[in-house]
Length: 597
Image (cartoon, rainbow, N blue to C red):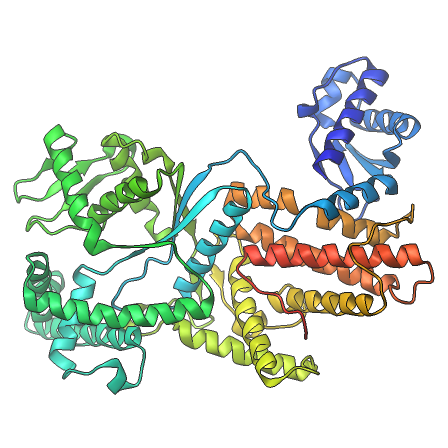
């Protein structure tokens, strides 16, 4: 496809040279896909050349089009719509593109000239609650972006920074001490992360009651929030933890251990993985060292109460707290340490942080602080900022226990996928284990696709029922399309039509065949664009476009009823390449595609 575009640009340059006696560099000839309502495959916008060529945009398009049809075998026709020259490409060229596609091995990298050593940090859960719907968008984005960057040939490391310390963790620990009575996950019959999340909610419930009581006694709201006994106890516990108090540290290890077991189970269920885990408890001390370094060099300053700050007003930001007056660290402290550890481990050219847009300011501060410290990796930091996920019922709130639990949501979409599949009668001939595997693939595929098809920067509304539909812009529609093609390829094999056999013809293509070749051939350009923008939505749209193009092809031209053996062989080969394009693109989204349905 890239070779075809380069050849077409060279031909356009030659046309302009011959017709207008003006030389135009190929880099100035930007081609775009022709809009569906017009004939053609590529479009040249002629408006930018009116001044240099001394003609109107339509005159330019007409003259260039006529020259190409008369002199360039690659172009079989054209039409001009205002300042848009739409070019129809000869079928022989598309057949050549298709042959080149067939020669490409599975998983061949798409070089883009982008960063070669990349770290993608995602998930980053707190150990005081289980993963929820918002975490799912984070996990799916991080995993997919990592896979997309891998597809460009980059060496990509997936890492997870676990927020395993801090005041929020102490809240769960304190509630467990007060109200847990030694309860374990086994005794409660629930996963460890869910058990700890229960005590985080309990803390907030009792804490709010204490605040209300203080306010009723005449204490000002802000003072009541600081002086409530549970809050002062939690702060005492945090100081004790940082001081290495044996009893506090022992409880912390026990409760975090329960949470990690729960997280591991969830990660396995949703199909994401990591090359390395970092823990805030192991990075905040290094962060403190960087704060001391900044103090020593005059980059940071200490206030009268002993707290340490950085002045970023010159950078258009604000003053930022780096260490509290009591010496305890804040989020930015450990982030300084983690950035350095990741660089020591991977010497990255690009460090991607998959973090919700609520932390946009925090990430600006992190980069600015590292730049002030003169760190060589400061400019490599990139914040993949994504919008929050809302529900029809409104915004989720962890501390109030109104979140949509990730484990429960996965079970629900799998159950919904099962119901939708059974209703459509798509499980004929499958054993019970095969059917259950299909339901899981469809449910998880529905969930991932729904969360990834929206541009990451956009806030989104999640509709579970809509996500599992076998029709429309959904994951199951694309998965079903792949299963249909797999069935066709099995039938072709039974009839002795090999998908990888050399093609002896034909020389002409049906419109839907031509469209399908063009869609499938876009894969490298789609990967490059998705890597540049770090948007899996680009890949999701492509997978949907390919599936739609195949369904049009399947509806309009026969495959096994085709009497011409050459045409039948081409259509089987085209089916195989389409299946590969769907499988590869959905794989970049972390979605499996079934062979049978």
